[in-house]
Length: 150
Image 1 (spheres, rainbow, N blue to C red):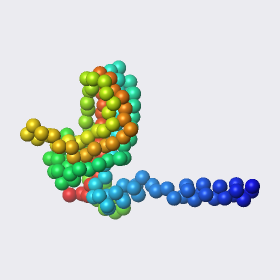
Image 2: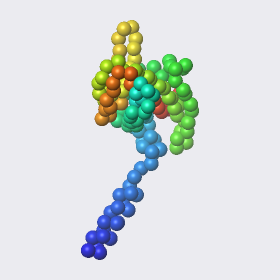
Image 3: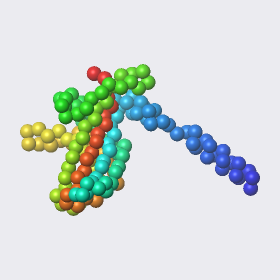
């Protein structure tokens, strides 16, 4: 019995020591994909009470070149800062999108799209378990995008 308890404690300690830090995951994503995208979703009802809050890391980027072009052109609508990670310079871009729903539904994706000349192309998609909304609910999505400095 003692051996089982000692073995269980050792396994727990090993499992805790294997975790990676948040900064390490950003750095490794930037190395492999050349961009890091994170979404925070806040849902408020018509009385402005917080109904749901999600932090979404499951992100699909469909067209990196067009996303970079859109970010380059979005000077007044987004906040841009320079940061340093592991001695390398990156641009951190924060943008916010707000949607007020007019009908009840369940939302399981938030997107960044390129709307030009009457057509819309999804560039980035944040996929999550979803949240219900009713008429009057306001959804605010804050996108944080980190990419190599220009």
